[in-house]
Each structure stands twice: as structure tokens, then as C-alpha cells.
Image (cartoon, rainbow, N blue to C red):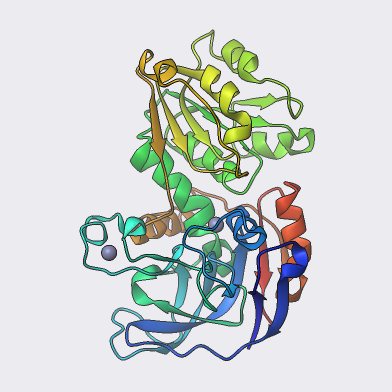
Length: 346
Ligand SMILES: [Zn+2]
Ligand SMILES: [Zn+2]
């Protein structure tokens, strides 16, 4: 089959579009015919070597996959050939540890990140994956939309609903609001009844950000502070919740934008840089730093239901053939994308 393989971390030319053997399903695995696969900043970090934990090369990147079931291993239950399915961001979880048994299976000690380990990822024609890591795509939901359901939407559902517990009437600041997660964070925070402040440095993304439902756009020049804008928009109070898709680069301004008792939801980190802070800056205001990682199968199913009902509009900007992977990585790495880009195999 055709696949994009990364043998050694590096620049765009670290990815080669090549032929590798078709996958064979293990007992609890299915083989999917990949319909489309989202390109995530995570893929860029794996490819360029910034992300090392849990990565094992050579690998086939890609964890935002939707497709149809082509073959089932003998122990697979609940899925059959021809089913339309979408993946979580895992290719394997154990299924019986305390995390797997309590809806926190993305944290399973034996988890394998889909696309970071071996020749198992969505930048390919076919993919073998554990049946624990996929969900049925309901009727009426496009497979291109389903591909981004787990990562670009489900991670934000995890943040807004389950970790952040955003309450009606609270103010939510979303950083990197014009990105793949940001545009869905705006919609979900709005759905939760929040007042949404959306931070961006791209004037050309403002209209789309507003169309997604942001009440205020925090537009500033790259490298310039935005905390004063947030303070003005909140009568000096700051935001009750920050959904942070950017990380270190915006750290100090986010800190200054957080209200007393605020919750800071860390989802994204675009660089390998560290940041110094004084813990007292947070605990004297009773503020919480909270972590959000990936998506459980239940969260994925909930997102697909929201899509089916039309309560969430997935934002797909472009769809390219798999062979054009370098063009997609270049755009994502440069932050030039507005919404998700998809790759489709031949
Ligand atoms: Zn992703
Ligand atoms: Zn487990």
C-alpha cells in the first residue's frame, strides 16, 4: 500500500511517500480503509523531532482517521466489515486497567499513540487498529468530518465539559482561536453558555472566528501583549477559564488574563521551550492549572452525536492527496491553516 513514512526526524523531506506491506489484523484489531486523515500540529512535532516521548521510528504519522472496516480479527466485537468508523488518538489501550475501566483510557499505561509508533498511522491507504480505539460514525456524518472528531473537537469537549466544567455565563478565553482546535473550542464554549473571547494574531481569521460564535476577538500583533485587551473586555476581572492551544509563547499574557479562581486548561504546546513562573502567582489567587489530553471513545461518540445533530460544525479548510503531505505540513507548521487540513490516500 501507499503510505507516508518517517524514518528519521527532520524537515519536510523526512517524510517519504512510498510502498509498504499491507497491515494484517491481530485478534482484536480491524483493518480500516482510510478515507481521510487530519494533519495535526502533533504530527509536525513528531516529524521534526520536538516530540520524543512515546515516539518510535520509523513511523507512519496520522491519528485523525475515518474510514470503513475492511477486515476484522477473530476477537473483534461490535464492528463488522463495511462499517464507517472514526479513530481516537490511540492505536492500542489495554482495556482493563483502572484508567481504561473509568473512561480515562487515553491515560492507560500501555497506550500507544496512533501514528507515533511503527508503521501504523493514518497517512496510509490501510490501517490496523484495536477495536477499543474506534467508534461508529452515525448516519449523516461525513467521513471527512468524522476524521477530525476525536482530536480537533473531542479534545476540546474534554476541556470545556469534563476537565474545565465551564458554567453558563462564565467568560472563556481561547488562545490560538483560529487554529484547528480553537475554532471548535469557540463553538463548544458557546454551546456551554459561556461568553467567548478569542485570541488571534491573524487579522484574516477574524471573520471566521466571529462566525464560529466568538463574542469578542482579542486581536493583537505577534509578540505584543494581549492581557490589557482581555482586562478591558472583562472590566478588569480577567477570564474565568482559559483554553490554551498555544503554550509557552503566550504564557505571561495568559497568566495576567486569568481571573481570581480561574481555571487554565492546557491543551496545546507549539514549541519545545520551557517557562519560569512563581507558584505563588497562582495559589494566592486560588487559580488552577489543569491538563487536557486526547479523547476517550465516549467523548468521541458524544462529538459525533453533536455533529449529527448539527450542533457542531467541523471546520475543514482543505483536502489534499496523501502524496502532497509536504505541502500540508509546511502550512500547519507555519500556522497558516484556518481549520483542519485533510489528506486522502489513493
Ligand atoms: Zn490531532
Ligand atoms: Zn489500560
